Image (cartoon, rainbow, N blue to C red):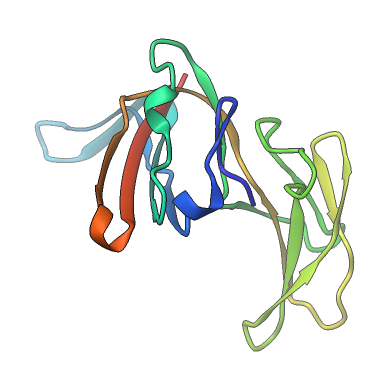
Length: 172
């Protein structure tokens, strides 16, 4: 899978080890009444994408224009449970559809093991191929999120050709 920040593709040798996290951000607070009862107040919800990587080459992230939004083509999948009877799941429109990065599925077996199964797309609905004896299904996809990126950080040790980098972005 190829990680992309806008039009910048991160070379494989700069991304031998990648971690992506998707912590939610948003206007959320737990308020308390006089009696101490909690009231949850929510106003908006977005996603932060924190991507760290390392490899034998620098990633070249200093060429990114962080003054404009960019699309992050992620490499860590997200999952949506499928309706068991139909094996269908509605996926977000903001997902990768480039070659080699299409949605797929897994069938969960009685022993909690999983079997990878193909997905057929019709619009945003994924239909997973049936697997005998499956107890549930999950559709997986790779997010494609339009973000505001913060300036990346990088470091390295030339002596052992070890380079590390990190970029944090927030959904626009």
